[in-house]
Length: 230
Image (cartoon, rainbow, N blue to C red; front, side):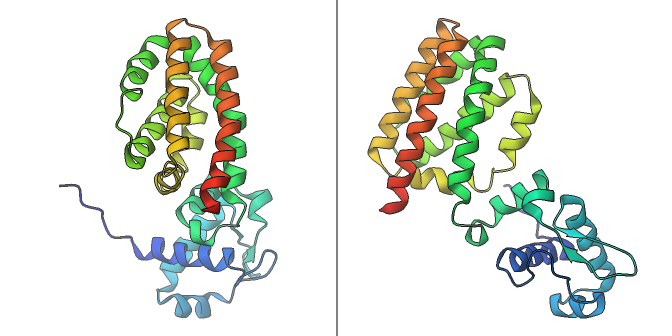
């Protein structure tokens, strides 16, 4: 059995502080309360708070200046992949346009890592796609299949940065994908894409695979808008 270990106090405190920042309780550019006061508010010790703040400073949420108050940074402009991962773990507190922006980024990145995957290892991609074109017609199976495909494409691309970026959304991807694949049209659209991509991988044609992926990613944004409007 796989057990999920409980979060440590510093991790819980970090999650609560991030939610407070995203909700505007601690706005960008403003100072956090003094250390003693903030520790009391969070119900943790001051050493635990210091660990929490160091973690958040590392990712670009806050700026620690010894002898001066801790300031909330403009995490959209000064944050890193840690901010993206945290946003994906707090979807209820993320901005309304977060998913749309995420899909826009995928629209830009997916064609590139798909082309590289077909160039580098079309045989491994063919092996996976032959399984995906036969998956059962359920939102859950398609959500799992879509994650497997994009994760494998990033791995086969040979550029681990693509994989690290995608892995930052591992908490957000399943529920978002299940909502997306509630639509029968979306499932049919993706199954067709898997077959088209299989054909291009068999033909070892990275240019066509890139073009097809670019078109499909653009169309998937339209399907997403339909999903959230229902």
